[in-house]
Image 1 (cartoon, helix red, strand yellow):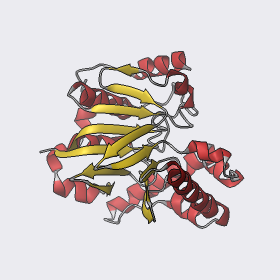
Image 2 (spheres, one colour; image 1 turned 90 degrees about the horizontal axis):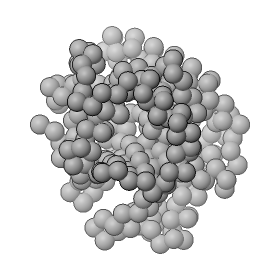
Image 3 (cartoon, helix red, strand yellow; image 1 turned 120 degrees about the vertical axis):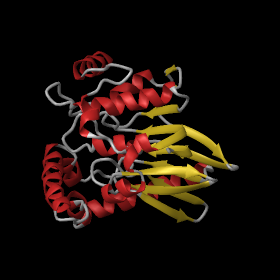
Image 4 (tube, one colour; image 1 turned 135 degrees about the vertical axis):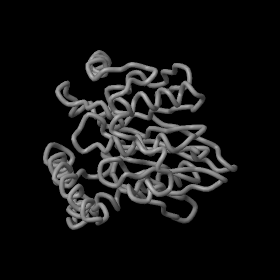
Length: 279
């Protein structure tokens, strides 16, 4: 049975890149029934999008979300820097799918400010190292990371984020993340928000900073995390293959399912054509 939650927030999925863990995300999306789903930026990576690479599981993530919307889930697509070409269509709505640059929610009497977070790059001096890690070098590091984790899984060892370890070992990268969080908290305080929720930096976080609570949904490249709101409280969900199978094996995406057509047909070519036409 699917878990019923009020809100699920995912960010930095980066569909269309080798680092995206689309199959694991499909597992997660099939296991929940949220009233609202927020895609908080960098859902499709338009920067690195190429027709030669858009696997069927990436297509099926889109199909799954469209199916959730058709079944009553309100889906907010908030633009990020890797899909900023969509910002010209902000405030577009079609059924339960809504495109926005930011989202403000009132939950339990608390004001929540939700946006991707790339706007802070104009306030913070952007590290050249992080810029390089965010490009092709980062994508290669993630691919190597995935290969090593596949080997670890065969020996029953847990998944590790080597890309995260590289970033966390570099002083400039650590400072950028710290400055990002402080800037988000400061601006949220000045604007009178109780919560500020971001993505962008690929670091899941839940931090109480006085009058403001800072939350970050992480990503589906390194950490495989989401934010969930249920029973009046937020929590960070972290995907674990072993635990996930034990908790609900029936909801796990099977290989043969990736060869079946969903109710809504959407080919890689169609996705590519739609994105190119939007840009």
